[in-house]
Image (cartoon, rainbow, N blue to C red; front, top):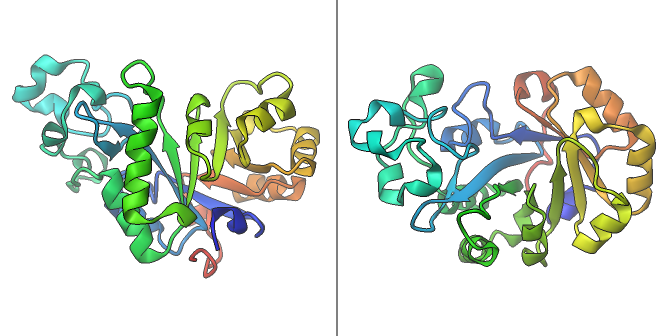
Length: 259
């Protein structure tokens, strides 16, 4: 069973950045917390200054680390992730900001090893880094990690930077959008050769969802924390939703969440 086979199931729940109700987002603890409580986990990846893939959502480090409290990094404002080497990133604390519990840096390699060992499915979102790194460098780095961990079957790759997606084939891919749908949407998605389309709940239109599903695209919506909203979307034909709150959304056991 691979990620696309998973989409043959109904009412899928994706843990947005892991179990972020109980643990700091995009950490190993957040992955542990989401295990067996959802159908797949979503995390974000980007590159350090020296080209190592790490797990981090924001382009800067202030919100989710203690970087502003360390004098040795005061000169690195505005604290962009891409301005820090892996060794420097490993000096930061990624959890105390949340509930006072320290957390170490999570690298992509560690995250992929975790899903491999636990037989889980992962939606890996590639953050837009085109102003710092060449597209080919980004994708080659990620593909090398995926190859080394042998996690091809367990992954779906998504990004708001759609130029990345063709470079990720033959892995399953999903185009992410937030504020508006691309013009001539079906043609656009076919040109990208994506398998799925992920968009903001504000853009939901039942007619459009039906149209896309009839043309073979899987549809996943972000970000929902209301079970009733999720139920309504599933009735429209949506394959899955992303949630920040597994306590509310994971009302049943997901014994089929593993390979």
